[in-house]
Every structure is written in C-alpha cells, then in structure tokens.
Image (cartoon, rainbow, N blue to C red; front, side, top):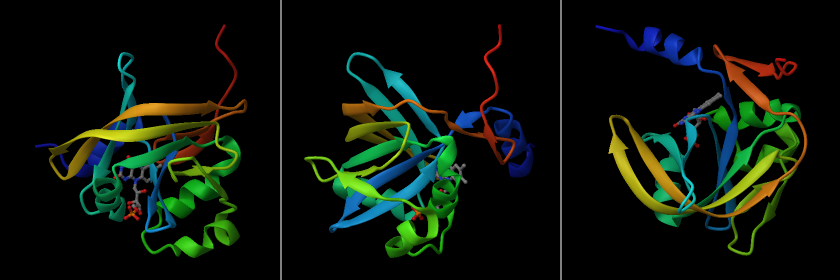
Length: 164
Ligand SMILES: Cc1cc2nc3c(=O)[nH]c(=O)nc-3n(C[C@H](O)[C@H](O)[C@H](O)COP(=O)(O)O)c2cc1C
C-alpha cells in the first residue's frame, strides 16, 4: 500500500509550471494556484485542470462555467503563494502579492504580467476520487515573452539553460 506522502514525493519529481485559475464570482476575483493542468486536445482546443472537491474554487467553477488559466512568470512566486493559502483575503491580493487583474469581454479576470492566459469555457466535469477533472474549451489565448515559474519537489524553481 502506497501512502499519500510517497505518492506526493513521486509526483513532485514531475516538474511543472504554475498557474492561477481565475474566476469571476459575483463581481469579485477568485483565484487558486494549480499545477494539475494539461493540454487535452487540439481539435477542438481543450485543456484540463484537476481541482480538489474541498476547494472553494471547485464550487465557483461549477457555478460560473467560465474561467481563466494564467501561466505564472518567474516574477510571480508571491502570487502563487498567495493563491495557495486557504485563509487568504481576496481583497488583499494586490497589497499582499502584487496581483492585479484586467477583465475579458466575458468578465473573466486576467492576471497582469502572466506568461500566458487561456480563456476557458467549461465543457465537462468528471469526478475522480477527491478531485474533479474540469475539461474546458479554450476560446482565447494571450502569450507574452518571459520566463516561467517552475515547481519541483515542493519547491519553486527558475528555468535553467537550454540543453544542447
Ligand atoms: C504549486 C501548487 C500547486 C497546486 N496545484 C493544485 C491543483 O492543481 N489542484 C488543487 O485542487 N489544488 C492545488 N493546490 C492547492 C490550492 O492552491 C490550495 O488548496 C488553495 O488554498 C485552494 O483555494 P480555494 O479553496 O480558495 O479554492 C496547489 C498548491 C500549490 C502551492
């Protein structure tokens, strides 16, 4: 029997980028740090994100059915930390972590300075254990230049040089 800690350590070997999922909830910006994010399909354009059923964001995604995925740059570690804290104050995101948002025409919050932004419309939600796999159609993207924030073995990292 594999315990959760060993599973976490194995998954921690899989280096990822870091995203903040943003969703409008009654006019306020709700965000959540997530790295269980993946491309799914090119035709149609689909992505997935896995969200803990206990997370507040879980209810917001079901309610709003539209959200943004913001791929963090290496300057945005404080924003990742902020949106991973369970007891954060959403009205203090700018003072606490420097997070500022624009809105898309659909009203979805877009994090300023993120490396990439994907505007997502929920297509399906599949419960899987204690998480739900949200699959969404990508309706718009913004891509900026810069370097990503990385996550590896429970630590934030910066990208190294290209292997030749
Ligand atoms: C680097 C990192 C990646 C994370 N990835 C996920 C994820 O993919 N899915 C998830 O449900 N929680 C993930 N979390 C935990 C959530 O960010 C955290 O539980 C958050 O407080 C949930 O916020 P909410 O309850 O307001 O939705 C991650 C945390 C960190 C630090």
